[in-house]
Image (tube, rainbow, N blue to C red; front, side):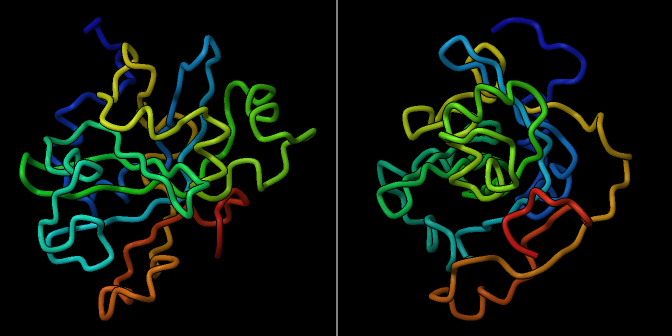
Length: 205
């Protein structure tokens, strides 16, 4: 792999963080893609942590390993993208050490680069909030699909994350319950959704 610029988050950053810590630390970082010759990026404003094997809301609950979820058991720094309702491609960051299936779902970004490309991919004419607010929306805007699952998060592979540059080092972050996991018993009440206060680009207050 090529040399990283100083702003790119390398694999050690993801390997050394559990999902809860990483979900907080990623707020204010930026997510970048270079797909089909188009570069797009956005400021991460909303995340959710999934902490298997105990977390019933996780696809890897009780260490369930399937062809889809096996990437979650790898060392941190890979993408995990799955199809929701047969329509939406949801992008997650695998984190932690090998064998510990932790991941962070990216739920909302504020568009930065390649807005015209994002609009084209979303069949929109202007950058309204729904362009990238919500995990399915942002994946489509960034050109991410299940074909990109298991990729190293590195510019050489077309998906990477960079350090906080557009917000303070200590942004005001709200912690609340995750969305759409009523099936998860007591785990649905865990305050493992995080978002940047006052951002208009989040999926839900």
